Length: 159
Image (cartoon, rainbow, N blue to C red; front, side, top):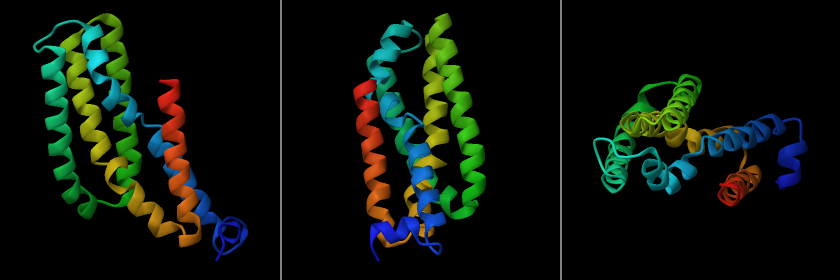
């Protein structure tokens, strides 16, 4: 089956477009921006309970532990539940990061970034690729992956 058929055939197009949409939303959670620029955000927020360097180390440890926890979470909860509540938690964490940066609360900024990583790794981070491979046919997965990496590239240029 060709990529064209995967996106135009009545039998496969819904799953292919759902996978493209999910991959787009996954990349727009801004995980790469947070991971790449966390040191700058922590430095600009001021000194809290940790230096920016120690804060980045803490973020790495929290990300590792959240990733380990996500193995259990992905097996236990339904995909839809994880997507819906996970993205709500991601949005709330982003709002908290923004407000704490704006009002100058460095410790809250760090904790908000940790909350974002926990929410991301246990929702979109752990099941996006699984979900896309379940709903889309092989002919569409190449374009789905390319969409994800293209959005990541564009966001890196913008950020």
